[in-house]
Image (cartoon, rainbow, N blue to C red; front, side, top):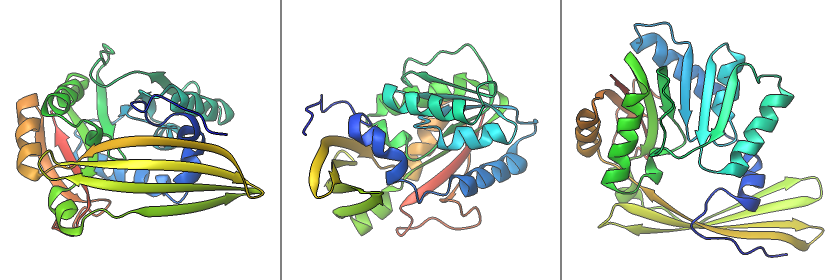
Length: 262
């Protein structure tokens, strides 16, 4: 069965339904350990409430809520938020975590947070300077004085040096097999990788679901990120390889983390 969807909509339909399975190898617990270590290093305040921008199905928010933080997660995908809310109910975390459908550029919660996070390359989906700058201004506007901003993104020198490749992922769940085919194309003028994702769901050798999404993901360079953060009122404190605080970024570092502060 093939379902035609608006190709401008991403993380919807079968992709949203398969999201947790597709990224089941992602170690959210370890990532949350690392996020907490960043809090201990940089925060002068006791971190209590955190805004999770682009929260997806709640992978980070739910864990941090279980650890005692008050979490507020937003995502533009209604289907991803529906899954996140369902998981929160099952885990009985409704009092500690709140999820809502919203876009970054329109966000105005009238709440200040001790920390804001944009994980799993959420910044990369801000493909124009205007979108990125607006996002950073929104982050700054939702942070308390001394608040911490943590994010990760694709690092330009690594993308250009290593070049993204076509990848195929097979995942089995009972009698069903989910296949994800990722076909990337690099635009070195606009600094964007366009990735065409095809998701196939197969049961007993029969195709029971299929969807296609085009994800346009921007990669960044340190000078532009530093400049735009400063212009938005954020101070970039450190940039390092993903989950490797003491490491040095290079043309081999595809995924970079950064910490900034108001």
